[in-house]
Image 1 (cartoon, rainbow, N blue to C red):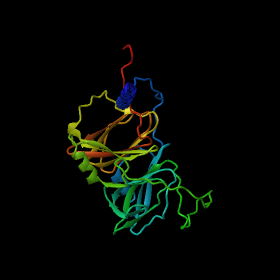
Image 2 (image 1 turned 60 degrees about the vertical axis):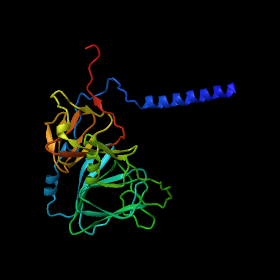
Image 3 (image 1 turned 90 degrees about the horizontal axis):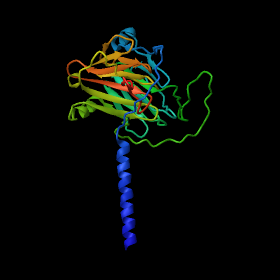
Image 4 (image 1 turned 30 degrees about the horizontal axis):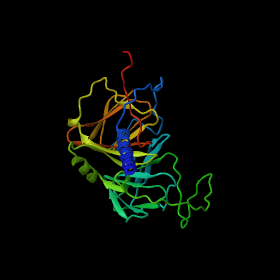
Length: 316
């Protein structure tokens, strides 16, 4: 009897310790550190620009229905705006190891994604497809569709066996077998969502602001960041924000205006569907701006990218 009681007590103590250890492990910590920062400031290397103005992009391609314009290409991500005339279809295809995602900025696109009912995405929709999931898309309606299409840098594209693959310089296509994953939808990896749906989720929070994860992957992270400038604390001229030592960050404005303070540039305000990019090692500070709500979609190559803030020097 005594042995059983001791065993039960020991088991309960172990379980309690495990729970407490788990809770402690979840507590945020602060690491005061020395971090590298190049003496020569990071530069924007084409096609990357600090600010791509969406209206100027449309003006550049005025009168064209089919066009594409790269706006992001670094060591982690690649993105481009693509306009497609009504009736334009992409062949069925998939990526072996990376997700692909889109922001629809105009027109209508019918998506066919394996395991999902076909759906039509229009202006303001966010759509993604997991790796090894066959998909295709078609522009419908009476005007071109425009989308921001983003994937992990150097992502490969494969085609189902029932299609003839396109010609690819320097490569031949060979028949292969590949395991297709089961990729369930969840709150941090949604196949699609409208701006209105996500904004409503943020408005339902006590502070009417939220960072909602749209993609959570070991190769990429996409966050829907919604709120009001009036709810932000004041910022001093000395506040530089933070920088990322391992990768850049890319944004598209989904509503309202976003104010950007980026090391080495004048502070500026970005509007609807404008894109902003900051290379690694550059301090930056993005804030909601103006009257009413505003939203930015933040993208980078790490699901928990490090944010390095200024810290006091020891002994000073």
